[in-house]
Structures are given as structure tokens and as C-alpha cells.
Length: 212
Image (cartoon, rainbow, N blue to C red; front, side):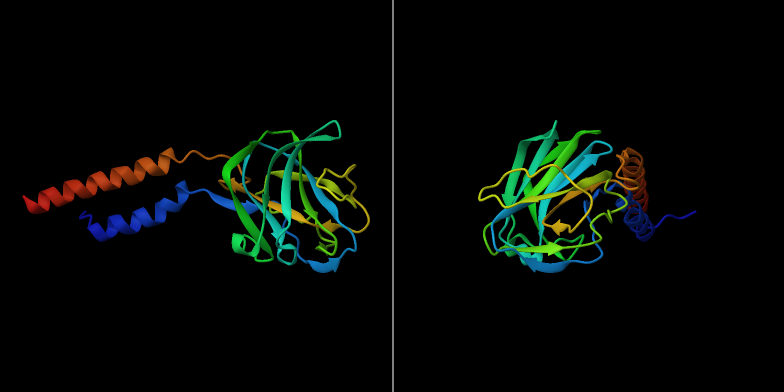
């Protein structure tokens, strides 16, 4: 059977995505309704990582551009700050949900399986927040469990607590994680990489025979 260069290129194009990783958004609400607050405060979402995951971006809803988002690891009701970043319109629109602006972190953070975390958005007076009744709609590949939300009216950034699951949900922060579907599980890419390498070597051999 004759293997042409065109065939090799086509096969490589089909196999290449198998080795790729992509991002998914942590919380994927079906609706976002803009609201406002007359005081400064923090809006937090709590979640547990069901497996080891890599968080590489922090987001806010578009009408909240300019807010700073904080990531905490939560232990015994208290939080240890892991990182923070301001998310603005210039950060760019999230490729996973166009309702959000997304700021890539300079260094991705690994979240441990079975540990609880919280993302918190802090805003000053008159900052806009988005209320949503469908906040628990999660991306199926996110690999997390939503533990609830909390808000306060503090004049400085902090971790509001305890998380609750009822009442009005104020949708502040969001985040994005790297996954290899399905389920965010880590799938080694060695198999597809080796196949593509073999195809490339076959192509080189074919060219040598043609040129001889």
C-alpha cells in the first residue's frame, strides 16, 4: 500500500488533538443576572477538588471587570491565600464562557485531591455582582464538587464564611483548570505521540526511497 505525504499529514492532524490538554471553567451557570451592592464586600465560592487538578486562570463576570480574585486553600474554616490577580477587560474574554473575563496566572497552581478551596472576588462600593439561581451547574469535566457560597460587606479582601447552599447566590469569581477529558483525568499522551513519531519516520523513509 502506497503511503503518501498527504496521508501522513491527514493522520497527524487527526491524532494531534489526542495529546492536547484544554481548559474548562469551574462554574458554568446557565444564567447571569446583573445586580449591584451599595457597599464593598467579598463574594466567595467554595469547592472541593475530587482529584488533583491544575488551576491556570482566575475569572470574573464581565460586569465585574476590575475586581481582584483570590484563591484560598480552606482548612478548618480558615483560609491560606495561594494566589490573587486582578481581572480586567484587557485580560480577555474566557474561551470557555463568554460571560467572563479570564486572567491567566503566571504560574499554574496544583490543587490536591480531597482538599477544599475557595475563590473570592473583592469589590469596593457600587461594584456590580451577578446573582444566579443556577450556580451549581458545573462543567462536567471540572473534577470539583461545589460546597457553597458566602458573602460579606467587608472593606478589605478576606474569606467570608461559612459557606451556604440556600438563598440568593451572588456570582462573583470563577476559575479555569487544565484537563484531559474525560472527567479531568490525566491521560498520558505518550501513545499518540509515539504514533505520530512513527508516521513521521515512515514519511522520511518514503521520501528517501523516492529520491534514491
